[in-house]
Every structure is written in structure tokens, then in C-alpha cells.
Amino acid sequence: MSHIDFDPFDSFDVKRLTFSDDKDMAIIHETGQVACRDYPHPRHLCLNFPFGSTPNATYCDLCYCYICDKPAPCAQWMSSHCNASAGSMQRKLLIQSESSYYDSE
Image 1 (cartoon, rainbow, N blue to C red):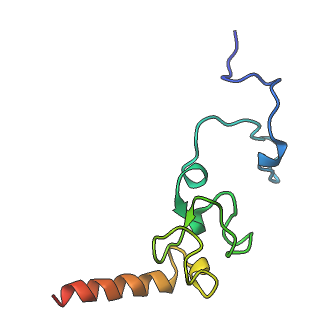
Image 2: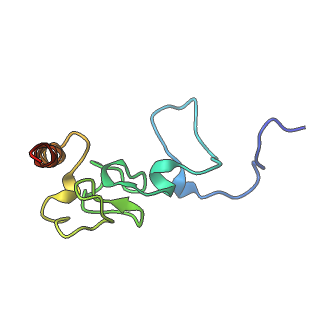
């Protein structure tokens, strides 16, 4: 009887492992899908190309622009949109301008 839900002798992709300074624990297998890797996601949340540790202009097939909600790369990707994140001023200004547009009607 096994207490794990996979065969530890099956092959796995070593490149997908996450290594850290923690010597007591290592993730060697995963099951299921991960939202920010396997489903459409804003660029700054991409697990394939971590924001800040890879060039922000890089993107996977499921990344979308956080400013214009279009698949990456958008028309303004290289000029600035690739750098947008939840805390970025660009997104806040866009939301403010859209809300003021709808408030004026």
C-alpha cells in the first residue's frame, strides 16, 4: 500500500523543479493544473517567466496585457505595457480615467 498518489520511479522533468536554500524539503512531483501557468493570466503573474527575475517583455502563450486585457504582446507592449503589474501606476491611471468617463454620463 502506498501513501503517495504517484509512482516515484516514473520520470519527471527536472527543469520544472524549484530549488531553494531549504535543504529539508524539495518538491519532486505535482498533479493538476496551476492557474498562473496553465490558464490565461496577466504577465506579471506568469509562472513560466517570473516577473522581475526574467525580462518583463518575455511572455508565454497564455500571458495577456494587464493594461489592455489583450493577449501579449499588445501594440504598446515594448513601450511600457510589459512592465505593468497590480501596483503599477499605468493600471491605476487607466482605471481612474475609465471611471471618470463613465461618471460623466
